[in-house]
Length: 204
Image (cartoon, rainbow, N blue to C red; front, side, top):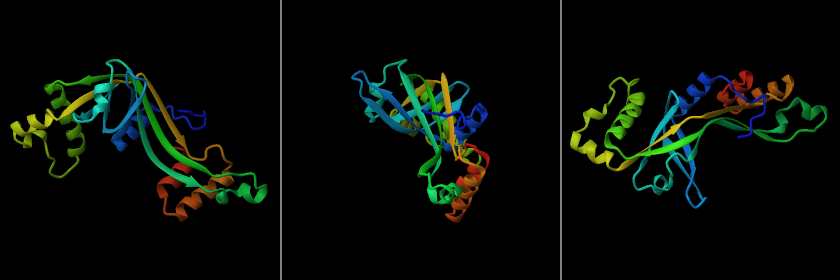
């Protein structure tokens, strides 16, 4: 991912928070024939590991060579920016449209797991992450064990050892204060307070 210095987010905790809030990512790997595969998966990033799981019927996991490099792509808010919002349009007209967005990419070797106990631990951790904040959280153990075992046989786990993190917040940081003010006003007029806030602080 191309990340100019003014768009780069160095705060690893901010990147972790962004990934946790998104909760899903697209895993991209390359099969033995050189063809790419991509699947959107629910993920959890703890320490230097990302865990997720495939439906067993998904052919993607079968094409992953253990230890081969993988890429998780996590997207956040994005929005079109019209040049009409820039003060520079009235000054000299040398402006063009662009797209603002936030994204985090995680890279590292990938391992497939087809062990029932690994899968049980993984889905329990993923479930607890999303259920714990609820008033009446559901737990994996709430379902009959035989049923859960059957569901576990229908999935395959995947794990990445994260070796590199790129975090990018492209929110008009390269524009003048007057241009950014115009972008903020434009987003707010369109009901995009989330985008306006990111232009103000340059956050993910």
